[in-house]
Amino acid sequence: MDFDQRIRELEEEIRRTQKNKATEKHISLLLAKIAKLKREKLKMELKRGGGGGGFDVAKTGDARVALVGFPSVGKSSLLTSLTGKESKSADYAFTTVSVIPAILEYKGAKIQILDLPGIIEDASKGKGRGREVLAVVRTADLILIVVEATAAEKQLSSITRMLHEVGIRLEKNRPDVRISKRASGPMKIFNNSKLDTSTIIAILNENGIRSADVYIGEGVEYQDLLDSLDDSLVYTKSLVVINKIDLIDTNTLEILKSKYPKAVFVSNYIPETIQILKDRIYKEFDFIRIYTKSWKGEVSSDPLILKRGATVRDVCRAIHRELEENFKYAIVWGTSAKYPGQRVGLDHKMDDGDIIQIYDQ
Image 1: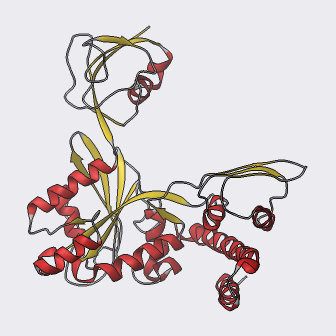
Image 2: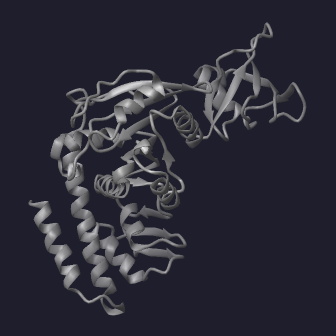
Image 3: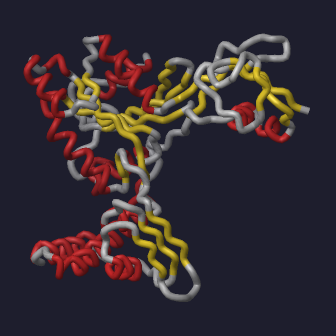
């Protein structure tokens, strides 16, 4: 099947269709067909695009960050500034031809940073080994979209579009849609959104779902419903990094800061901006540091790195899986304890900087 041609035909039909209440269902069904074709195309491309040629990198550390950007935006130099590891760089495009991994050690956390080959327009369609690059991006816990200050708006628009085309949803939660398929019986729709129920059923039927209990949350839109049917999508945090700010004047910098208030503005020639970036990367993961105390009373200098909301159970699992099975109780010092040396159980929530001593059988 020529996926691109069929998608273009359906998109052209949508463009020709006058948009009003009467055509809403028809347009939604066309969108459902397009989403289904894109999903089938993406799955086929991902099978062809993963790994090989320096692109298959083992995941290490407490989290993974992918540097994504066009050639020559300064990703390699940024990797060096963040981690101290040299990544080959020069004044020509496509310097990095494989994934360069390095570790950022910050506040006790070990964060893997991947310097990826620069992508080009239509990378999501396979140009410039784009499929391989974007397949690696899908494995990241945080995507750093690196753009050059002199072309920030254009580059950011292109990159976010290409990431969306390969099934990466930035800064979004999974849609509030739950579908429990049944072998038979009528479709039961619990619809708390403004979507038309008959259109919901038609979209589900188009995707082969004819008997199910379906919950649609408040605020869900048609694109959210379509996304909920695609288990290949990944939902990832992102951070826009506007690099080479030393190349623009103060007025242009202020305009960019106004337009992108959540972005990080950096230059390898301004060390304090790199420090700000390190701090923002660390904060994106909402880590907490837990220090263990031995029976001899010695407190570890290297903390366990866990996500906020972690419990004593999570601490046990991070140390050794058998520790949870043989657990008796724990003693905790720090802000999560009601008093120093509080005795707690597995469900006790830990805070950043807590000290814990675990007793097992």
